Amino acid sequence: MPKLPADLPENWTQGQTISPNGTEVGLTEQHGYNYLMKQVNDTQTEVNNINGALLDVAQQATVEDIKNKIGTESDADTQPTLFGRLAQLKNVLVEKLAEVLTKVTGIDGKIGTIGDAAGEESLVGLIKGVNESVKNGEGFYRYSKTDIKKHIQKWTLLPAESSIQDVYGKLTTIHAEKNGTCYVKINSTDLGTISFGVYDKIPYQAVVAADQSKLVGLKGFNEKKSEAWFLEAYNVNAAPSTEEREWVFPVEAGKDYTLLIIGSSVRQCIINDFILGYTDAKEA
Image: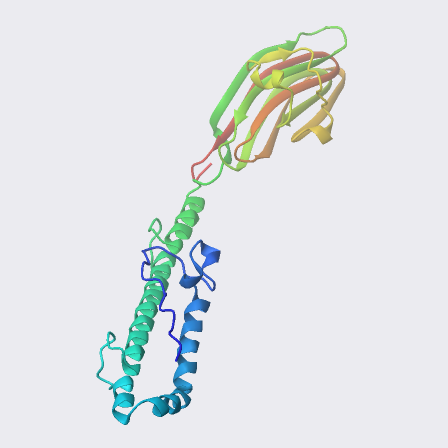
């Protein structure tokens, strides 16, 4: 009977992953299920062929020699007998099975159970924690009329009776740390076509400009709706008119948003009151 390789790995460490071929997870071929099963199959094949082997042995050895080579069921795994080899294989298989069960149990522990509380170090606990954050309003912005982040009053972007012109006024730039919505209220006295725009892509000049400032020479800027994150336009053509308007616009976490007042062929634009509000509390 040819010698089995007896090269199954005995240097497993905590946290290693078992895979079909071993190499998929950065280990050797001997660490894989398939290699282990091949050694089992080879052993079973040799056991099945033992009768033929015994016939060969019988031609060269005495009955006593054959008995010595076969051994007994009580042979230890260190004995150079058939039963000793079988005991050795059994020990290896039991050890590897125990390792597999340990790893499966570890996975179960990482997944957790439905009874795990929010915040526990398990997949169920983490999911419940996210759910609690959303329920408490911690995971996103809500628009708010009371939690004011920016307030501008009595800002004359273009005084009354000015010549007809285009004008760009920066209200503010915000950095959204969370997804959600923001509230804007603008009370203004205007004459001409006025637009309120929110831009996530805009020339650097506008992003770094001071809040409540008039912008000049915005190269590469296009106020068309297709270029804006959010844009609403309104016309005041007959005479100066004071009106108040409110909007809610969405934001995405990680983006900067620049808020502009844009006048096209205007003769007057005065911001009487501007409010930007949002909160990450449960009640807005």
